[in-house]
Image (tube, rainbow, N blue to C red; front, side, top):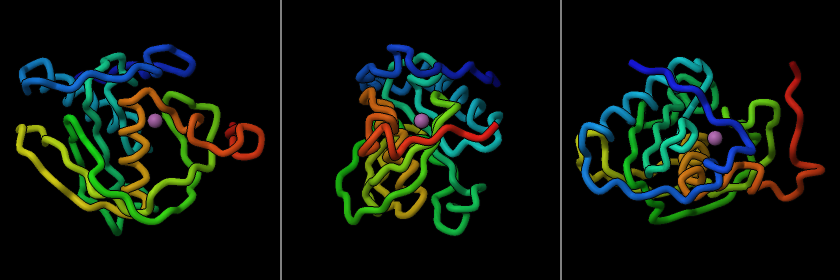
Length: 166
Ligand code: NI
């Protein structure tokens, strides 16, 4: 169990294009566990990507099952190694937050449904279709692996980004 510190914007690690995982060795297993522990410890978090804890490898965890927006439509806790979006469909706009950008939220338009391929924590290849809030969370986390934050996805920094109320 290791809850890790979250790297905050504008740290350049968050702009890094992360490296694919070659083998699911002990270092990757430890990374996965740290991501899960960090997400669970944050309480309200629905996902964390490896670069957010300072590791530039293509691993994310997503779990919207305990959130109001995602609890009726989800795959539970998802561990995704080398994830890739195979198909996208539709478009919806939602307010997003990010543990690396704690003081702001933003309106972001993303695909409403995605088909995503990845290796699970045992290294088994999976393909799932996600929709709604889970699809948004997956797209948000996968963006982190290519160095993108929600701030890079808003139409306008002036009108689509909002300071959180304390
Ligand atoms: Ni984020």
